[in-house]
Image 1 (cartoon, rainbow, N blue to C red):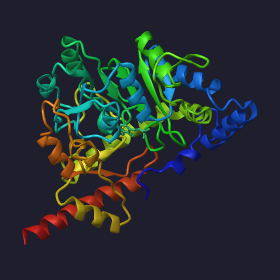
Image 2 (tube, rainbow, N blue to C red; image 1 turned 180 degrees about the horizontal axis):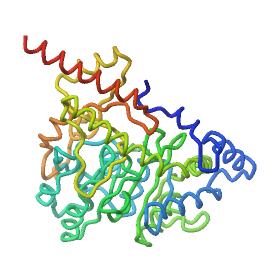
Image 3 (spheres, rainbow, N blue to C red; image 1 turned 90 degrees about the vertical axis):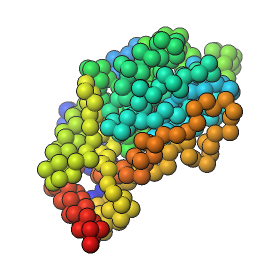
Image 4 (spheres, rainbow, N blue to C red; image 1 turned 180 degrees about the vertical axis):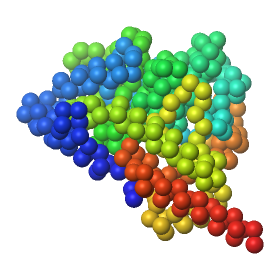
Length: 383
Ligand SMILES: *Cc1c(COP(=O)(O)O)cnc(C)c1O
């Protein structure tokens, strides 16, 4: 059993009857024929298709989800001495990009039910240095944007949704990456919309921010060899855009399969007496980029499952505020890094095999293996 089965994806059939593999081969051949490897026509085609899917005016396709965050922060003018509020319970990129610009990540603890930034603790973290807020839509469901946006608006602060894990999910009928000032996502192969390499995108309805993000992703170039902004080489490859375009006709079907498989996991696990299943906040759907439960004695549970050929993973074992690379060295850091609920989550969470092609039989095997491992464990620790 694989944690995420990307081989199965290549065999899937598109609405036109071809396999994804065949459609990808055709798209790659077209790029090799026209030869426009940088900013070829597939890039614009991808951007307009994704903007329409998300329901925003502008999409800028970039080289990775990390670059999407960096470019969004640069477009908002974040620089040394600024603070950016975010969650400590995420992948390194969320904070790394803040630190790269010389700004300070300020951490707000999570809501332990959704694992996302707790809006009730947001306002007390805002200081005169605050320049932006980056909630992460972790594991596949959006953070609480109605509450976060209301606070941000009161303080005139922009909000970047890190939607690397939530692309395709919705909140109150609106798609992830359309829920705040800027949405960013990743096309890393294992993400809900994965390419076959690195890629990412920024989304916004603000035309000025869109222009700035596009410019910054292309060396801040306003016209050929004239540079109005400091930028980066953050363009998506034409080849990667072509691969994503080949896969897109099946994406919504994959999103639905993810929702179905996630819900089936929850009911099977609950029926087996395991209650630490993901909780969807009201109004949210999830794409279950990770299907994550909490377990006691995690390392032993993981080892026992591995023995039965069931891979698991931990997202994430170390909080961002405890990463050696990010230990706060700035006196401006106003709130410190105390995040006890994120800390407990980081010690307990465990992600199970999850992808749109997970069979019923494999899912049943995961559920019964986990149930028996946990039961054995409680018996042995009781004696
Ligand atoms: C994967 C991920 C990123 C970074 O995306 P890359 O495309 O790998 O650079 C950022 N934030 C979160 C929450 C992620 O899961």
